[in-house]
Amino acid sequence: MSDVTYPGVYIKEIKSQSSSIASGASAVPVFACFVEDLAEPTRITDWLSFTKAAQADPDTPFEFAPTNLLHVSMKTYFDNGGGYCWVSPIAEKPKTTAEKKEETLTGEGEPPPPDYGALFISSVQGMDDVTLIVAAGQNINSAITALCKPGETRFAILDGPQEALAQKDLLDYDSNSYAAVYYPWLQADWAKSEAGEATNIPPSAAVAGTYCAVDRTQGVWKAPANMSLLGGVRPLFKVSDDDQSQYMGPKAINMIREFRGTGPLIWGARTLLAEDDEWKYIPVRRLFNTVQKDIKRSVAFSLFEPNSQPTWTRIRSAIANYLHAIWKQGGLMGNTEQEAYFVQIGKGVTMTDDDIDNGRMIVKIGMAAVRPAEYIILQFTQDMLTS
Image (cartoon, rainbow, N blue to C red; front, side, top):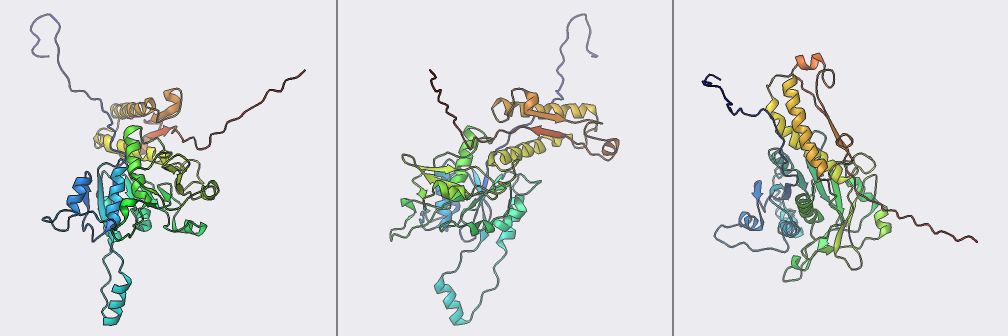
């Protein structure tokens, strides 16, 4: 210190070299919609912002249409605790029988429609905050293949069939730990027109709201199951224990059920890879997705830093502190930190000389994720008195 001029204690503030990892939003959905409803990807913060975005004419007040799939999807999403989200087009509304007949009579054929599936994929890939893909009544299976896979951190919430469920319906879904299916569709009195025409409500929309509410109040590691669906919705079909037992794996379908004295409950928390013990539970897959996303974003500071011990120490400390916070909140199993997680980085530990020479910095992370108590078995014994 050049300004030291007399004997005594001097204080100098030095910028800290420590790093930390911030937790990002774990539940940010993007809803698929008809291009006629919203022609371009739109960020929605609440119901009011949706009504403004969905106005066909800025000078005409928004009018809720009970027969509009996007309208009912967004309403049930916000009714069930949904936060800010995105809406992006993926398809055109199917033509009515009368419209198809008219085209046949006039001999006028329209050109092939634009590939809105490709538009949806490219749009979502540009949304850094999106973590959930919500079908909202659309067939987005091809998009899921591109958007929800190893190396990505998105999870898809899909709809089961609108009619009574059959085993053949499982063929419509690929085995995928990054996706889950919900059944049956829902109904509500508010989803009926004045003429009595009812619109079935996609379960994915209501369930997406529950994902948001559970993440916000309890954490992404909590299974979004045994949760009531709000907003006056009810299942289109009744599901029995026997019905559900047929769809527990290898591709699981999560049921929405009503029991005596309860409203509709989400009754399942399995992915479409239910045969895999590691990734069959939704909260496990989503916890790992969230951790990967947060760490990837937060350790970007290390790019172009020296690939040496000081940098490794900063990264190890930042990740360990982040995982410690998750463990303290109950998101990881284990009575001690050592049982709950580990973070490894260093020469001879995760990297060779060749890795270092080629600019590769490798971190190994392990987590003991909590799993839902899916089966609770009570054992009763009766002590027999002996004479």
